[in-house]
Length: 293
Ligand code: SIN
Image 1: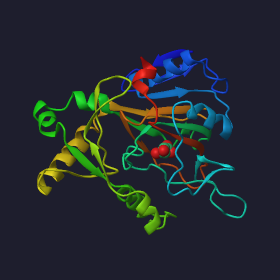
Image 2: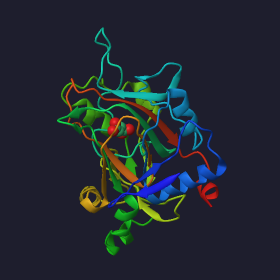
Image 3: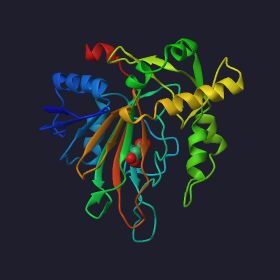
Image 4: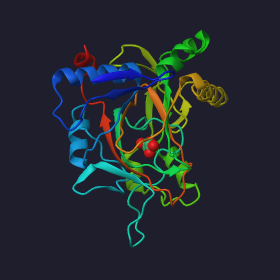
């Protein structure tokens, strides 16, 4: 396995490694450590089917079944289809607007996610260039570069995150097929409290764990201060030096750290520019500090 860090921002390419092969304990540890160190890992040139993707991703923790559970691989609800494509009868083949806005998956859940693992089958192209990038911001760096007084003010504080916030933003977008969340879906995903700073289980370093997609307010601050502080954090974390934009190639498997990055799916392609991606979500269900040691 050859690890090539990106020139700037987070991310690395992992070459000469076939993800269909059983993962040895040593390779598992190398990948886990690299995930903590680089935040985003691209394994180019892969050819996995849904069960193989589930087998690889499942080594890192329990795979989540999305609450909306709209589109998934046959017999495998933990492998979701992200796509703007439709079948011959006009039926959508996947969720077409997943992640279009800065967020961290599962920050709205008491049990947080370690990682996402996506595998590109079709990538929209225009004039020879790929569209539909996925962008990442490095929350290790964002924490480290916070002003000392902000770190001090927010140390030990929690923010309330709500699944419905991002869902409703997506729903308002033109062409969205999302309906309002049902009472049963809401009951499954009530607002939760998350520490604003976390110690990353792999790196042992602090990260800023707060994102515009789901964070609603900071507990213990007056509403005006909470709003102003969240606006400051959201602006601070968007700085270009923390950014990596992944230009997809079919065959890429992209694995990203959901504790130390926030991400955004860029919606710059049309309905006639097909995109099809398999997606697995790995919950933070193992003792990663011990596994990475
Ligand atoms: C996601 O947020 O999981 C979707 C990312 C993408 O489709 O680029």
